[in-house]
Amino acid sequence: MILRMALISPLCVLALLCLWKSTSLAPLNVSHRLCSPQDEHCISRIDESANRNMYNAGKNMFEEEDDFILKSGPESTDTSSSVNKPRAAIDGWFKAFSECVGKSESELVKDPLRLNGGGYLDRKECNSFLIISNSSNSTDLTKDPLPETDHDHPVAEEVMWVKHEKMSADEVAKAYYSAQEAAKWTHLLREIGLPQPNYQAKDKPLYVRGGTPQGTIAPDLPSCEGRYIYLYDLPSKFNADLIAECDTLDRWLDLCDYLQHEGMGLVLDSSQEAGVLFPSGTWYLTFQFNLEPIFHARMKTYECLTTDESKASLFYIPFYGTLDVNKWKFADNATNEDRDRLGLDLVRWLEGRESWKRNNGMDHVLILGDISWDFRRLQDADQWGSKLLQLPQMSAPAKLLIERNPWHPNDIGVPYPTSFHPASDDDIRTWQSHCEKAERKYLVSFVGRPRPTIEANVRGHLIQQCLDNPNECFFLKCKHRERVCLRPDATTDVFLHSHFCMQPPGDTPSRRSVFDSLIGGCIPVLFDPYTAYYQYPWHLPEDPKSFSVYVSTELVLNGTANVIEILKKISPEERAVMRARIIHEILPGLVYSKPGTKHPSFRDAFDISIEGLLQRVANLRTQKAAEAQQ
Image (cartoon, rainbow, N blue to C red):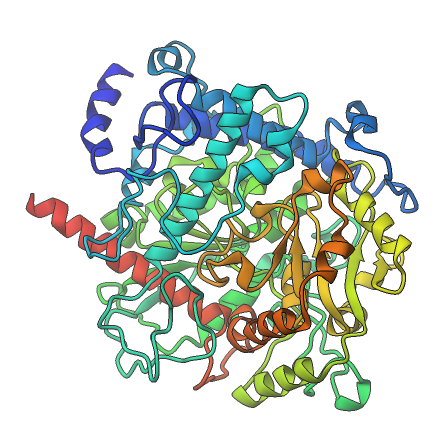
């Protein structure tokens, strides 16, 4: 351990992020270091507390009482009955982070908490994120606790964990610090996805610093130089064979219909006569966890694929890890060997490739259509998810996920797949026009289930506020057995007719419904900064106020905030500006278009992700070359 500390120390001089050395530091006056021996301890503590409760949370997910609405304050919440729920897991995740950032180096040497299988955020992952160029546009985050931007970031002092009555002042300070770190990582991920100044678009930059990755302007890219991608031809057991098992992949749902048409699902009636979903042939029954086959299908038609590994800037690994992990998630008598088998086989396959050995996977990308925690099992005693992303071999590659771990620098959040899959510029413009013309008869709506067993249940309070104001608020109640909320026509109809859409967290902070509402031109109301602000640096604007409304969970729980009254104070003119930005700037960059289609005027979620990944690799290569010359 002492030798390792000695090796890491020089690297830490170059680093951008660090953890506290002492609990006595004030939250706004922190000394910064990166890649200290605390890192593996802290990350393991964070991941451990989040993952430990996932199995029981999943088992009980479908056993809730649909009609229960929590109306009382947080002091009446029975936490003992929900200790194994995902929300409690996230709560424990924050507290674990608070504990570890306060440890001194000497304490950590005496009390290491290594992960099973050897996975940790070690210096390799830290090194692979030292990719901010030396240009004047880069932000030196060693000087300030938060990124220097023109926008206010909702950080931990506004989140329920910080103001929780049971938290000490020291825990409050550390939780505040953890959110600062999440904000910084998100800012850095945004920076690394930015093209160099000489990257020309047709009319304006594809990405706007301090703004949003623009889905509305497609860049003029006449050459594939620097854009070649090598698509691995994996053995079929890693992808196609899993699709063939579609009827056994989910305990409660036959996924065969959802996996048709390369993961987009069954084609829905989307004629204009249908009233809600059109233009024709662009709407599908898309499952929220089907990103892997959808992304793979788009990659197969990418214009700069190469079969020459020496030309490739990026290597794409088409592993359907979500289908594999879901296969075992609720399976009776499944073992951790079952859950890990395919992931370990994948690592062995990659390690046999010269293209992998050349950069230890730094220039590789893995697409995972599930949350990060489902691939970060820490202890063999746990019965949830795989340990794929905890393996040391998986630290260097980029991982695109629908929900990222905010403190893992190579986790990058990308949009959940929605049901809208356009095939042309006209399809996008037709839908944008439809969104603009929609009659917004509800001030606000909520589509979801009460979820009463979630600790500190904000959903119950929001539902009650909605039911108390039927003229301003519409509640579409989702019931597991009826599955009405799996019908895109039902949910999209609500979003099209609402000015605002409440998006409280569920099992984890992120929700597909955030993207469904944005696609419908509905302004999301968020209650947790980890739902979107610290998740999707390449696809959502950096300024949260430009596309959303944030209301503190704690203020809702203690009865201080009435969401409907807050939204009434936002003028029609302000709503119109926000909605116009959502429809015309953000919406095109959130959809995954049909494979093989071209959008001369737009960049979709796939395009933006690929551009960000290629820029990330370019910056990594520049950093590596600079280090070699020193």
